[in-house]
Image 1 (tube, rainbow, N blue to C red):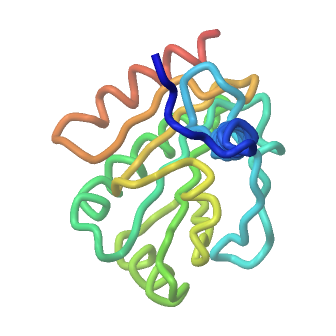
Image 2: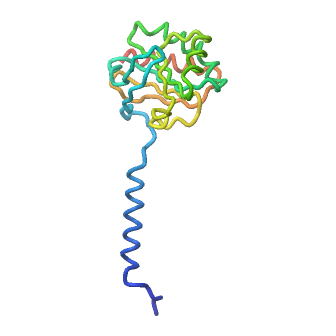
Image 3: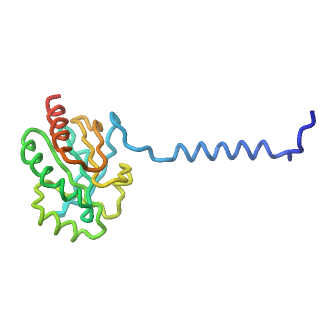
Amino acid sequence: MRMPFQPPFASALRALAAAMLALAAGAAVPAVTPSALAPDFTLRTMGGPNLRLHEQRGHVVLVNFWASWCGPCRQEMPHLNRLYEKYRSSGFQLLGVNIDEDARVATELAAKLGVKFPVLLDSEKKVSRLYDMSAMPATIVIDRDGRVRYIHRGFRDGVEKTYEQQIRELLKE
């Protein structure tokens, strides 16, 4: 059987292509998954000072990604406020990460909605990309050790009951 002609460097090209693919796959940022450590970040709060996720260790943390243009986000805010008020003295922290490019829009809407929990400004969307948040709202529940325990993408009626159940479970651990 006769083999088609292959230049002497064909195997080297195939090896180089395979190495480049492997390198690209390794460089890809993996999506946040349950049981993984929550990637650390620091963002400016609406009030001005920076807040670092790592500083919340020892607390159960709910990180909610939202935007002013997102109707379901606005619908969810009163429920999040209630959870924050109910559990914050028990070792619970709620962080709203706003992805609007204009911080004034986020600040005005948060004031209008009566948001009580800290709102962090991610106008460059670095943290939302880090967490692979492609749906709004998106919520990550993190345990006291800094591990992602639950991921919720989007909003549906009654999801606040699920959040509350998960918060209570993690506060008991």
